[in-house]
Length: 276
Image (cartoon, rainbow, N blue to C red; front, side, top):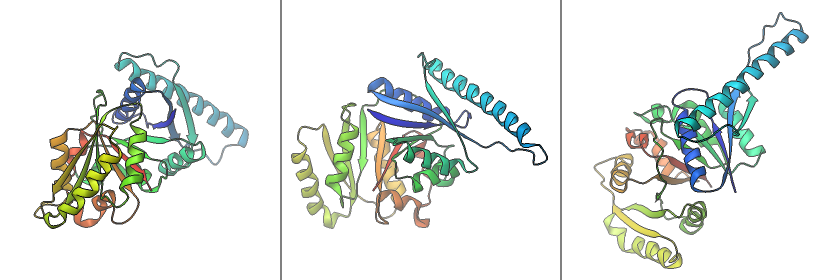
């Protein structure tokens, strides 16, 4: 059973991550833990006993707020969230706290909402971007305007350098969902024949999987992000999956300066990033 740490800061945008995680839990058995990272400022002039009492009271209020917030999201999806597992953890930096808590408690995924559309910085937000870059636990980044829907298609964008181990990871994630998987690779026309063989060999190897192939010629007149945007608009997947492992990986290309173009399609597609 997958363990997912679902983060929230009580904002309206953060509800998207909760909705995606809850939707996933309706399609397969997953263990959700709803998580809030907090930090309470304490007056330095107070005695330690008073500080402890104040902090205890504030934590109690936050715990109740978290439980009510989560329950309200379940209710908006016509589901019962009264028994949801909610956890608080104190730290100055929420992004580092999320990464550390997920690693120490052996979570399989971190689910976090984005903050909105526009440029990369606006889309991912400081906390989300840092969590993705630092976490060894796979991160599910959910756009702020996500609307729950049946998860039935996965677009896996690959550079083909580590295709077999990555594809195994994607297939394992999809084991219970049984969604359609589309393997996407961008290439130059001169290399198309070689890459076609790699992809068709993979399809034969995983013949029992619901796997389709899409080898696309990259449009050199556009940025990599624009090319990927077009592919996502065409496929309309429920989830986009990428791997972050080397400077040559598809995910890393998005964050280098030359590819800091608008990435507005992510405002509609949850992104799962596996760290390798």
